Length: 433
Ligand code: S3P
Image: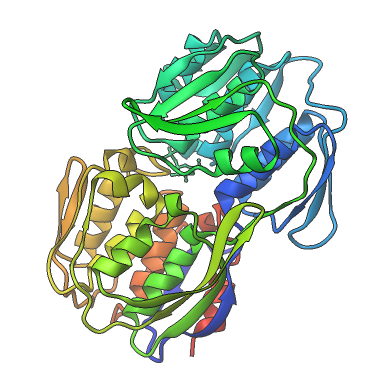
């Protein structure tokens, strides 16, 4: 299949209703925590993006059985537990969440494995999980703190850990390690990162304490038996974000996105939409397997105000920064992103890749060590070819930019959208008028 997408400007706007695919972060957790119930459970609305399929295949290699009963619903059978007779190689492909969360879990299991991944994942830092897991007694050999990771499962000891970064992957790796230990393991963060692990573990009846004291917010877990409850997954706000921004910047647009997860640790984009005075509303709020969900309506907004993203807001919208950079190109003034240095460690160095491609398109942007400044009010009028660097969120952000580019453009490596959102183009085409 051609991996270069040719795009063109959208004249008549996006209109109508779509249902957004399942949340990637919650899907990983449903599979992993589901596999720890030692029972048969039903998972409704699982993401079939390649990242979650990597987690599912790894669990299958370790003895978990599954059967899809419809497109996104499956029965997960972990009655035999997780095991491997000899050292197994487990492929995380592009998925940082699989590599980091499963490292935490496998460090305390009674088998050995080697976690490998694709070119992009092999460049991503793993010291953030290796260091605290080693404090718990984990035996991990790495390639200079990168993949492959050779993990020899062992009995772990509990720790109290003050995480230097607000990362849900680090927190969840340590939660998974702590779930097998009799004594409590406590993890502190200065700013709360996405809390889907905590929400799901409470839902499944684990021994988990959540709180806040002078050291920050913390989660504490200890050995727990998880109840075999069915889990339904809400739609992914990080996927909805591309449609929300597209509707806000393409004239004549008005869309409703159904069943979007609006857990407050993920809704930084809504705070930015308020700053930018985008015309949007939240409808039909409800709870689905303990997670908040709603429908989101967004209309084209002519006068978009510039905005600032920094500090505590960063973990609440970390994956939305590429698409919010696209929104900033249409604001009436300078928008600034700061405190986001961890963007350099994502599927690509998202600060550099965004700055390079925006300059290529003639958009006023300047790079900072921890973010960028975007001038706004950009008329985009350039025939260019942009490279995705195997980064799905860049690919979809460039696509949204192409909708307001007066010239046609090319996005090479576009197939990487399958990492999180295989249905992206189909849903875009459904809304195009
Ligand atoms: C994720 C956490 C975030 C996010 C990633 C998914 C998760 O990473 O960027 O796409 O599911 O826990 P960090 O925890 O490294 O910030």
